[in-house]
Image 1 (cartoon, rainbow, N blue to C red):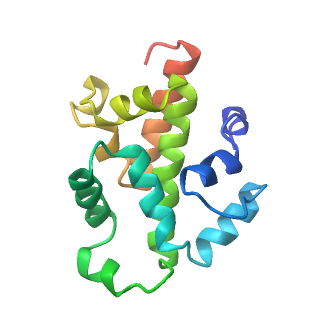
Image 2 (spheres, helix red, strand yellow):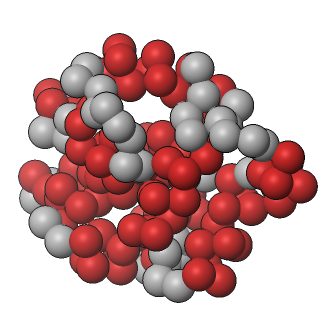
Length: 146
């Protein structure tokens, strides 16, 4: 785990998802994800990340197909939970780097030249893509030529 991950704590990631009680270690967060996060945790992230309800719905159904999401009672599957956590982690890091919810949201939605003009949100849909976004954010944070 990189040194900069310490800057974005498991509590910060969990706060994006409104998890209660907050996990106090990455191991605890990982356990919660593996056992299935509440559906509401994804909704909480989407409210912070998206600009309006249409965008929230669109992104929700990109993460979990509509029919599947509607079938879920209270909890997401482990795989869906991992996608929800990845989204929350990406946002938490962007918010830390930009020190502003609005700036983090703007960064995630703006096409970026180093991402072949895709938005960071688009790229972050896969685990490898999310790692690329994290690397880009930390380079920006530390002032390293991205």
